[in-house]
Amino acid sequence: MAPKNGRLIIQSGNVFDSLKGTIAENKTIVIEGKKIVWVGDDGSFEKEKNDQIIKAAGKTILPGMVESHVHLEATGDPQYEREYMRTKTSMWCFIALNNAQKQLASGFTCVRDCGSSPGWIASLRRILEMGLLAGPRLVVADNGVAQWGNQEAIAPDFMLAYYRQIGEVKAGVVGVKHAVRDRKRAGADFIKTLTTGGVLHGMESKLGTSLFTDEELEGMVEEAHRIGMHVASHAHGLEGIYRAVKAGIDTIEHGSFLDEETADLMKKKGSFLVPTQAALIHLLESGILEQMPPEVQVKTKETSKSQMNSHKIAFERGVQVTVGTDAGTPGNYHGRTGSEVKYMVENVGMTPSQALQAATIVGAKCVHLDDKIGVIEKGKIADIVICNKNPLEDITIIENPKNFSHVIKDGKVMVEKGVITYFSP
Ligand SMILES: [Zn+2]
Image (cartoon, rainbow, N blue to C red; front, side):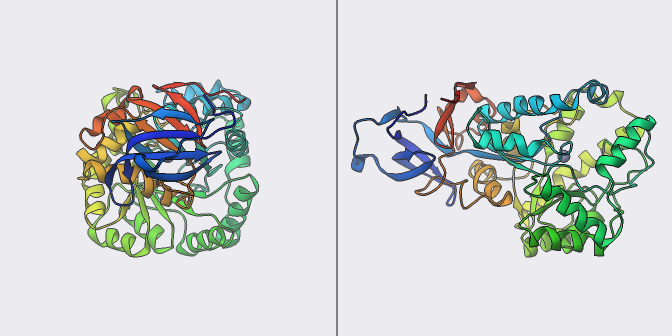
């Protein structure tokens, strides 16, 4: 259902104003090509001959939502390490496409990939930009700039050699600056780094510490900003969050052990928080955790105890909090980001309107695309979700893609009632 020559019209819907957090009733949206060219009262809309009209009376129209943290090449399979060993490199792009389409079908028209195997994901982004296949707008990090030597590496020798080849970051400011340029060369839009260990990594991977020095972090940020990239840091523990924010890192991923002082610094510096509550919620619910090493079980339980309170502190102190799930981690499948929007209401203390702002305009700012998406107004790209019900009255409707009559990306209807209907003409 792509308009042939004419315009695409969404007629007489109730439009969510993501800047104000309110609904404007009975508005008509006119789309030409990829862009919104007119938004106004239904009464002043002038129909043209070839217009293709979607009647939206009584429906709620949202800007396409932004998912700020996923790993598209990872499926969420609990046996991910085994599956990874059985997957050819050339298959990752197709797995990622499938996951990206799940995100699109669930109303997320922009997805930030926070780390994938090196070299291929910029190609997927370009294919989707060209409109050859249905999929969301991608913002990609390529391979993360990880703390090399965070823990003892345990794997067969050939795997260790491969990891060294693809992931070694040399020490020092020169080393991290080279890694930033290397990611740029691979087509990355932004840099993903880590300033603490991980919950799913081994015992020695501590959540409170980072192997990067302050000079290295500042050098990484300086080089990334200089060449037009923002920097995201995986950071659970307080020290790693604080040092990342102090060094000028733009977005904090997870942010599990935050205090007021650090939240205030984040606000002052304009850093974003991407909570990714889905990762631990699904890990704990799924029964997968029991199959994991004992130290991972301990870290997961401690982190999940602290996490929701930390996110609440951040939001209450005025930090910009956006929506991201870390989809791809064990038990954390793609296409369920609507639940994370609900968690923002249930666990962080947002109103439904604030949670929708987090998923739209705040997300657009977080991924540095707020000049193009995140709000429905003249001149912006037409990324739009049409909801049969009003999520301001019941935020849980966001969880079920069947509640969306249409998902539009780049001015093209790509999904109807949760099913992809777009094919390249
Ligand atoms: Zn992640």
